[in-house]
Length: 569
Image (cartoon, rainbow, N blue to C red; front, side, top):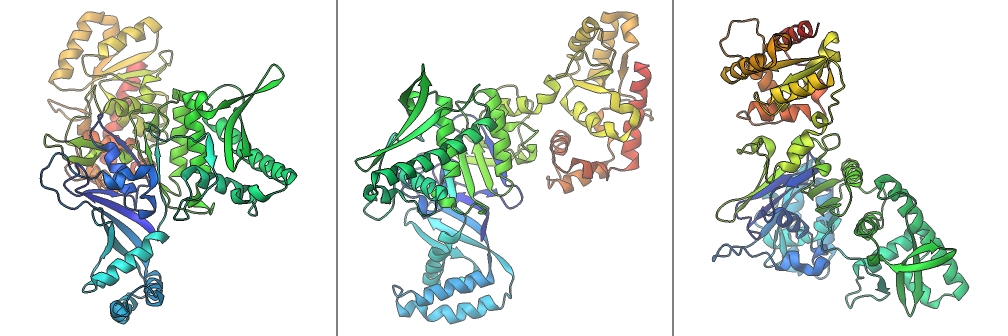
């Protein structure tokens, strides 16, 4: 069984159904301005699984009312899951054998079995709703039509077998320096005690935190040494991946007395050992320790082969420097290969297109009435060219490559904007001679002149290319007059084999090709040219799409390349 999608309705300011499909994209970065509702979405998903109800003081299942409205309707969190007919039959068998369920309620089981068997061995998408007011589950599927009580019982049996949903909040997660070894009245353990128990089990299946109190002191010392060694080995391994600071990771010491664990940082100074609390170290290390232990020793993912776990992260790596955030970005992308990772961020380092497909990014908006919506870039109606606000991290991430352009690079081609850059970079490999071209995007037609100055100063062999429209012609003329006849030989308008009065980058594409790209990338038919090119450039399937481009489009772009090469000589 696994999750396919979540739908949130009437949870805080999410009034209209907000759906997050994770069946095709297991990585979902969420961006948006402060207080727009990013954290609300994570909390709503976390609230679906009742096993999380006591986590984070239960705020996510208690504080769900819409404060913008005086009329309250039930908050419903729905999960579309994938389940086989066999699993459904096993669920009904459990219900039939459950002595706590009245016999009167079990009468419909035989009817339900017949309905399920009619499905054969098919995998069935099914929706389970959770009403946060009543805290009850129900299955929203025609199979259970007419059997509301069995629907509730079946949902209660199914949910515990679904993948785990884990939540990481950089601003509220804390690390306990002292951990009491005592169970709650209901038999459960605190978050950090359960992590310690898992650390013990991963070190040796025979170890348990509850056995320490009755152990011989020498035996206890050996067990603690084994567990401490396992912990430090894990921390050292992960530290090297994140490159937080120069040198080795600080060593962690686990002490035990009075039925309590004492977690300290051990540091050698001048030949003697000094001990510090976790919270006394840098915020970067504090985050690192918290994240690694909850990731590597979470009791909810005991089986190292477990897949499809849902990881929810609120502003991950907020206290990390840029390089460590880039490493974290790679880690999240790797984690999403077998699991689902949904995270909120304001950092462009966590949107690096080298690791994060741009098509996976989601934008959160809150309207004037306080209602929250979530959209893919291809569905967003606003401008992606905004230079401030929610999109700044995304824009900075998208321009990682262009901003790294080396002005000492030969055969530079200055173009009007980022989308010209994307198009020409995509097609460079199709023509051998064009592979030596290095495209540099400007901000607009006017800013090409700014980059020309750098080319002249750096003595770089270059060409400048404007769109063949009114704005392009205007700026082409101004630059020709300003830089003079010699430099003018390096300037050109976007060439065309036809005699069109206006000719821009979009005109290089046959309409059938743009429609093909939209279909392959599952973009809406009315998606703008910019959004189509943006999604294509950062798609993992971009080479596959390029191979399907028509000869008409290829010929037009090759014609442009040939004219550029002539300018460069």
